[in-house]
Image 1 (cartoon, rainbow, N blue to C red):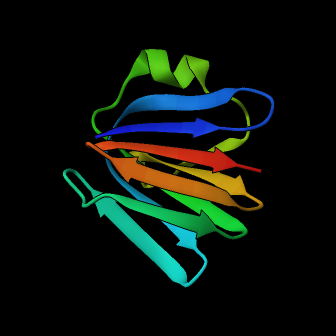
Image 2 (cartoon, rainbow, N blue to C red; image 1 turned 30 degrees about the horizontal axis):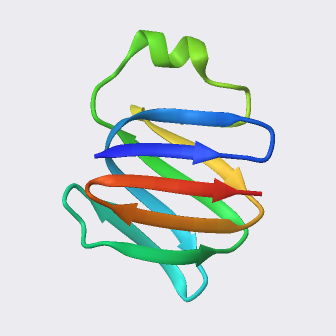
Amino acid sequence: MYLEIVTPEAIVFKADVDAVKVPGHAGEFQMLNNHAPIVSTLVEGEVKIQLAASNKELDDELSEDFKKDKSNSNVLYYTIKGGVLEMKDNKAIILAD
């Protein structure tokens, strides 16, 4: 699936991913490929991104706000203060604060 993370300043992430875990208003939840359409509010916490494949070009484009998992280079973390998530047609868009 395709994931895009948008902040008021810029699009900070856009790439194919295998999974994304987000801090939802009613609790943390994960979405995989072909997830049912959903719209959810997000609270403060970390977005966990499981990349589809290790991509050197993506590493060069990422800001310092992204943290890599030391035990798995295909996992990234991005901290948000809140926001909204929409998942539709295998594309997830996170509008983050």
